[in-house]
Each structure stands twice: as structure tokens, then as C-alpha cells.
Image (cartoon, rainbow, N blue to C red; front, top):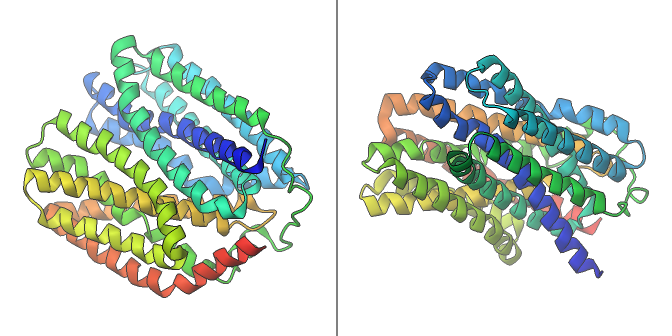
Length: 404
């Protein structure tokens, strides 16, 4: 098998695994609340259930045992961890599907927290393995594929699994999602031994200290915290915005759920072409400017057609921003510390993604949708300035890695 085809198959496998890890989380936290409401759960109960997703904030902690146990054979260790955690997650999904747990709230909460823990934990060695096994030149493409897979996972978990549950009952979604993961784990067994296990010398500095000591790391960490959550917050509040502006629930699901997910996935892949044309230095501020444009349109366009167009532009900007963030995260993972450095960056990304919607909610209550979106747009403008000012540092980092 030639190298190009082998790389393409690996990209497809890692994309599949990211989709398979995303779909259960989306179903648990965006799909199940609909069923909970039908069973009489209160808004407070449903809101508290979201706390089961807290393990996503602690990837940097979960990465530590993976890195410590890896020794010299990092790639082989990442693969073993990936297979083991994916199979454990499969088993937990089978338990979740064993019976309808909606009348056993504490048990369901415990199982959901276990699912969040295993999904979060498995994500670390899977993406560390991708960093190790994919060529440096393919990292931005890998970021685009990962972002597209997450968008498609949201469609599967937030739409298709609900339809499956409606037609075939409680068990069907969980067992199908377990099968998707098992297929991905089987693909990991097929992967050959990483050829770079012995060729890459680990960075001698301490995991966290060495990561934060990188020349471009301070600017990059700020951008990682802020490049996505403002556009992500606009997307988070888009469904209630459309509902409050006269769209029916089915229309909202079609526009934001299916249409937005497809647009975000396509934008994720198209961003790679943008980077190839103008380089990372131009694409980073370019993507944030695209996000700003989408937010401004969401503020000013009030007609039904205008709101639909703004919704799809927000989805486009969200997919592009996520694609670039995920791709660049690979360049800031030092050789020999892929799991630890990915865990730190993923925790920063998750912290920003979870904190900003809370502040946006306060703005929404105080100033309405227009005020909230205007505030997000102003914040995004500041991120654009920072991205433009940091473009040389980020470009030098990616050039150094590509030439290493």
C-alpha cells in the first residue's frame, strides 16, 4: 500500500473514531433531555444532569497516566490505551442500553458521568496517536477532518439517534453507538506499529512546564481559549433565537440541527484548502473575521430568510474555527509528549467553550438577543486583532514543525 493511500485510511479511521466518541455525548446531553421532559423531569433536573459532563474539563489530569505508562514506545502505548478505553466505553453504552433508566435518575446520572469520563479519556490517546502517526504536513487536514467528524457526530447523536429511539425504543441508539465504537477499535488493531516510536526523542523538560515554555505558547493559549467560544455561544443560543422569532420546532431542528451540522462539516474540510492558499498566518485572522461577519449578520438580519442565512453562516464560521484550532493543537504537541500536551490544550479549549455561554446568557437576559450578539461580535473583534498580531509566531511554529 502506497504512503498516500495509507495516510488517507488513517485519516478516515481517526475521523471515524472522533465521530463515534462524539455521538454518544451529544445524544446524552442534547438528545436525552427531550425524553426527560416527556417523562416529567423539571428544567432544574435536566440542567443538573448536564453536570455529568464535567470530566471534559480534566483532560490534562487524565493524560498523565497515559504519558507515564508509555515509556519509549509512545505510539504503541497510545494505541493500547485507545483500544482499551474504546472497548470500556462500548461496554458502558451496552449497560446504558440494557434498560430504560429514566425512572432511576441517580443511576442514569452515574452512568452518564461514566460515559463522559470514558469519552473524555479515550479522546486523549486517540488524538495523541493521530499526532504520532500522521505526517506533519497532514496535521491541518487532520484538524479539518476531526472538526467535520464532530459536526457529523452532532447530527448522528442529536438527530438520527432520536429518530432511532422513536422507532425502535431505548436500546437501539446505545447499542448502535457501541457498534460504531467497536468498529473503530477494530480499526486501531489493524494499524501497524508506529514507525516513529524510536525516531522521536522526547522533550526532556517537564510535561506542563515544557509545553508552556514554547516560544509561541502564551499567545497560542490565549487564542485557544478565545478563538471558538464566542462563535460557539452564538450557535448555542441559535435554536432558542429561531424559536423566539417564529420558527417551528421542526424547522429549527432542520435548519440548525441538520443543515447547520452539514455546513459546519463542509466548512471544516474547506478550511484546509484556505490554509493551503494563504497559509496559517493569513487563515487564522481570516477565520476569526469570518466569524465576526456571521455574528454581525445574525444581529442585523431579521427576516426569516435572513435569519436562516445568518444561522448557516454561523455554522460555517464555527466549523472553520474548530478545524483550525484542532489542526494547530497538533503543532503545539511536543515530540514525546503528545498525550500530555493534547490534554492541556483540550482542557483549555473546553474551559473557554463552557465559560463563555454563561456570560452570554447573562447578556441575553439583560440586553436581549441583539445585545448578546453585539457583545459576542465585539469580543470576536478583539480576538481577530490578537490573531492578526500573533500570525508570525503561529506561522513560525508550524514551519518549524513541518521542517523537523
